[in-house]
Length: 282
Image 1 (cartoon, rainbow, N blue to C red):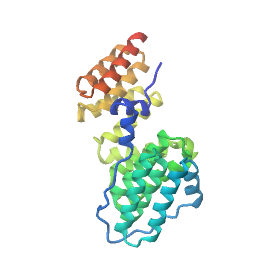
Image 2 (cartoon, rainbow, N blue to C red):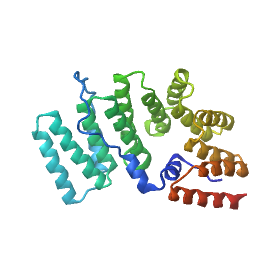
Image 3 (cartoon, rainbow, N blue to C red):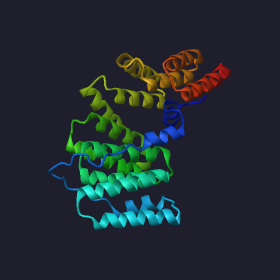
Image 4 (cartoon, helix red, strand yellow):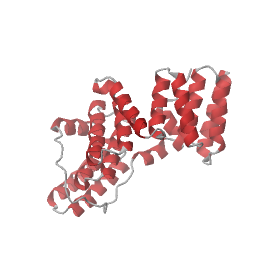
């Protein structure tokens, strides 16, 4: 029986991988407000940066462009100038489709800005890179974790960061060599504070599917749909859930409801293709 993983859900939600690439790399503006007190940076082992760069494959001309920009970066003094050059490096890495390189430059921006948003976006990019690239999983997931921990150091009440950190610990358990329960505990802490937190509910529902705790998954996704009746992820996961349980008809009903409020022709076409695939399995 086919299962929808998070990558497949992302593809359906965003209408294809080329759209996902745009989603993967949010931009930070150069004029983000800088905090007046800069926190001490956590030490990052040189081997991590080395490992990250080892996974990057660039042409000789691209390497030269990066080297020239990094040389400029090392020669400027003001934070504003550094941010402008880092934006150029980020945009170039994006044009070269190098998520690891982008994530590394986003981290350099976050070190300057020391804002919740900057570290949150850095964590998001490292985490999406962990999911969708061939980079060293252990190194990349640790970078994501470090970034979300920087957010929580700035604001311990940032539930989005705590949720993301929990997801990192669960999905990165294999790469980290740790049990996933640490991450589940963080997600439960979020729900203890905000029982309607959609991100925490969605992820706990997804993990419940993965562990075949279907009753818990149904309960969590139903809660999501009570809070947000047009939540796309919840409909797709409910589809997957009922298909796994062998109730393809009910799965199709959720997929049909999801399709009913979609406007993007590409998304509709992908949903139609999946509907036909499920009908064959009936």
